[in-house]
Length: 80
Image (cartoon, rainbow, N blue to C red; front, side):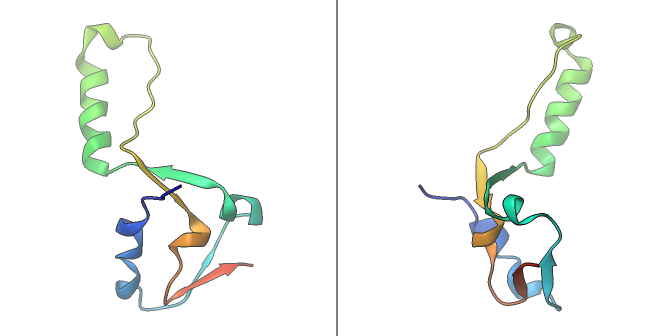
């Protein structure tokens, strides 16, 4: 299975300090997802203004999945 963590890995050179994962060991290993802020903003405007969205729940997702354990690189330490 391929994980779309390349965008997150591209940020590693800009981290001027060592980060440690703030969550649990279990959440460090599971598949996580994220969404681009522009996609989330567009969806929020749409669901707030479209009458057909009234009283509905929505999940906004643009396909980026990753495991925090695979985001690593210089400047990032593991769980603990």
